[in-house]
Length: 386
Ligand code: SR1
Ligand code: MG
Image (cartoon, rainbow, N blue to C red; front, side):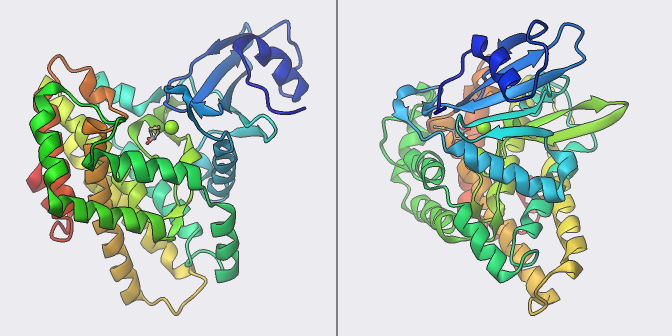
């Protein structure tokens, strides 16, 4: 049977047919779609002993509707990415119960006992000691395993070929890495930011720096990325008394520059900090960039002796990590900017009683991160700007 868009009422029979649910008289389903792109349903039985999530890609961008068509094949990229992460960091993603390529639907672990990191932070809670370190490790483990250090050159070529994702990369090249710096119908901003939006569009230096980051995004094939690693792609909580961090939604996955994953996380951390500053709820925000970088670097260096190609020497590792750092700082800047004057905004700012001061501060920080990334060589240097 071909592709059909699933509705809430279809889920019981769907899960039964796919072998995930025995008793369809004991199932409750609700739609919990939240992100920009897809539909998500949660199914559970009456006593809560069995529950699953179904995520289906629609043939359009969910929040825009059919006027913005988008191939549902993005779900194939997501399923492939989960397969790669499951090899090296299975503890940091949800359990995957199955992928239905005909319907572009993933059946995954129900994580409704956990919370989206952005929601936790928006409510004024802290990150806790583990979250950013786990994210840094996640990026290092996925990146190392899928780089030329973790795979043979031939296997890498095959991975690059199977991970090509032109449509989703096209979204990023447009909505993140160009549209905010030109006139575009997708862009919108608070009226009080019109002066800065115009200033950014007229800033030739800024445009050239973004052009470079965009070109690196288009041409660098360092490792398989998550591709959209913002705080809405991370679930956190506790299970059996231990902290749990799960990264999900890797539909933007492709082989690209590692700094794009770290940079996206850092941008969302920095924007969340501006929200907390505005509300007077600052806690451990200021340490998260450093913690995630330290965990990334430590894990990457720990894996380095296992590299498959020892022509890459220790001095090259230092140079490589320095390049990843600089790219990350730049991509953090582009992610901040696009979330304020581009298409997709962040609830961190939009739900503030007065979003203007924090948005202005974040925009200016974003520009600094982009244009001064080569001189910002440490977490402390970035802190000094914040
Ligand atoms: C048209 S999609 C806009 C954004 O939503 C996704 O979550 C990605 O962040 C993308 O850039
Ligand atoms: Mg997403």
